Length: 438
Image (tube, rainbow, N blue to C red; front, side, top):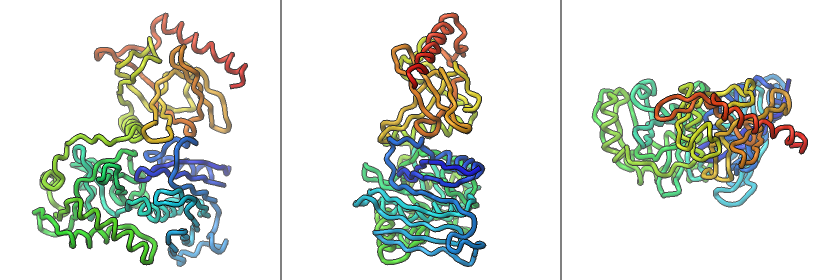
C-alpha cells in the first residue's frame, strides 16, 4: 500500500522538511529507522531551512523506461537553483527567500528504494550546507571529552575502540553563533549503513589528517598544506566558479582559525589522545552552547542505546507519583501497546531549538487517528490542561517511566491507594473531553 509521509531531520543544526508521496510502507519504515537519530517531530512550529517534495516512481525519472546506470550524476549549481539528475532520481530546488539563511524549496522524482533516496539527499545537502556557511566533509568525526575533532583518512574501526565516533564517512561542520565552529554527525555512513547518532554537536577544536605509513609522530601542518588537504575532503557535486569560491572561503577560514596536524592512521589511541590534547587545548572545558533540542535528541539516543536511562524531571505536574527532582528511569516504548495509566516522556518541539520541551505526563487515553496511527491525550496534575498530540507529528514519545527512585530506592508507580484515586480522577476527564469533541 502506498501512502504519503512527512519527516523532518536535522543536518548541521538546519532542519529539512521532506514530503514523501506514493511511498511504500516498507520504504517509509526503512527511512524512519535510518534517520531516527537525526529526526525532529514534524511540528508546524519548527522552521525548516529547506523543504523538498519527493515523488517515488518505478523506472528511471529521465526516460520512464528501465534504469540506465550509465547515466551518471549531472549537477547544475548556482545561486538561483540546483538541478541534479542521475539514472534513479531528478531534483530541482531554488531559494524561496533571499539571504544566506533563506528557505530553499523544491521537488524531486526518485526510484522507490533507500539507496536512491539517500543519494538524492546527499547531493542536496552538499549543495545547501555551504550556502549556510558550513561544509560536508568526507572524514571521521570523534568526540573526546567535551571537544570534537575532524579526522580525514581515519581508520574508523581503530578510532571506535578509543573514542566516541560521531561520523565515519561524512561529517557536517557549521559556524557557531559564538564565532567558532561546531561538528555534527550525519546520517550519511559508508555503505549506506545505519549509524547511531543524535543532533548533539560539539565544538570543533582541531583537524587531523591521518595517513598510511610508518610515521608515528604527530606534526603540526602549515596553513597552505592544511588548505590543500582539506579541500580534497570537501563533498562538492556541483561545478563552476561559485562552488569553488564557496569551498575555498570555508576551508580557508577553518585552517586559519583551527589547529591542524598530521599523524599515522596506525598511531595508538594514546598517541592520538596526546595529539588531541596538544592541538585542541583543554578538551574537557565545558560546552555551554548546547540547545535544548540537542539535549533532548541525545537523551532519546541514550534511551534507545541502553534500553533504559535515568533523568530528573523538574516541576510538580506529576505529584504525588513523581516528586520534583526525583530520578526516574525511562525505557523505550512501543506506541502500539501503550495503555492509559502509563507515564510518558515525550519531546515537543518549539519555534526555536531553545524552546523545545521534554515532558513527563501520564497517558489518559489513546484514540485511533488512521491506519496504525493514534492520537495521545496526556495530563499532569489537575491544574494542568490536557495535552493532545499525534506521535511523530506534534510530539514524539521517547519512552515510558518504568520506575522512579527516591534516595536510590525504587518506588513502584501507582501502588498507593491515593495514587490510584488521583489516576481515576484524571481518567474521569475523558468522557467530558469526548463530549467537547476534542
